[in-house]
Structures are given as structure tokens and as C-alpha cells.
Image 1 (cartoon, rainbow, N blue to C red):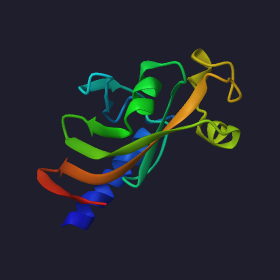
Image 2: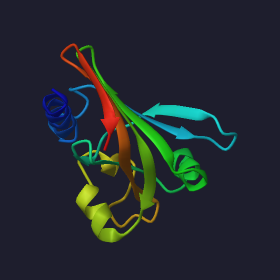
Image 3: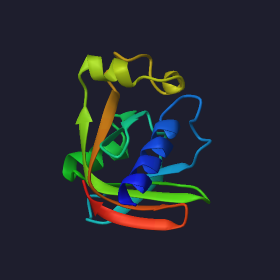
Image 4: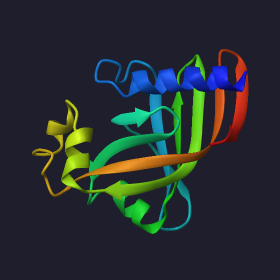
Length: 144
């Protein structure tokens, strides 16, 4: 049963990480630890993903998200709709190499950045270590 629900979660995440699926399959929330040690959560578009193995987002290097990650790599991601809730807990890192930035660029980034080579543009790569999935009335949790 766990593998079946994990497979469904991977499919939901894959759909959310495509340009055609963006903002239609559910809401993605990224939670980070602020400089006072408290969790902060914000809605963010999912840029790319490999199911529950890793997810990436884009942000500005000068953003609060990047500053929080520099202070603490602990993070959680929640993707949910009326039909499911995918909660992942793990670590997040800031990537600035040009190839990763090019690979992660998607339609809509141009509203915030001049291009993949914009020095303020960075990729936030989230690597989960555990999950809690509620899909189709079934709930499972585990470690990755």
C-alpha cells in the first residue's frame, strides 16, 4: 500500500512541476526557520522535481527565503488540495551554478529575473528525509 501511495504522490508532484500543471494541481507551501528560530511558511511555485526524492524552487539571493536558508537548512514542503496532502520534511540548499539555473528556468521567471544568468536568481533544492502522505483517503508516513 505504501508504494502505491508514494507512486501517486510522485505523479501529483510531477504534474505540479510542469508549466501546464502549475497552480492547477494544488498549493505548494515552503516552510523555513527564521532568524528567531520560528517556522515561516509561504506559497511558492514548484520549478522541478523528481517525485519525493527532491524538489526545486526559484528565488532571489537577496530574498527572505535565501537568508533563512543560509541560517538553517531545515525545511518542510506541503503540496495540498481538497483531495490530497503531501508533506515532506528535510533540508534545503541554495544553488547558483549557471547550468542548474538554466535547467530550472521556466516561463514566468522572466517576471522576476532578467535571465538564467541574473546574479540575483538562484535555485532552492529541497531534499526530503521523511514524508507524510494523505491521498485517496489513505495516510502513510515514513523515511526516504
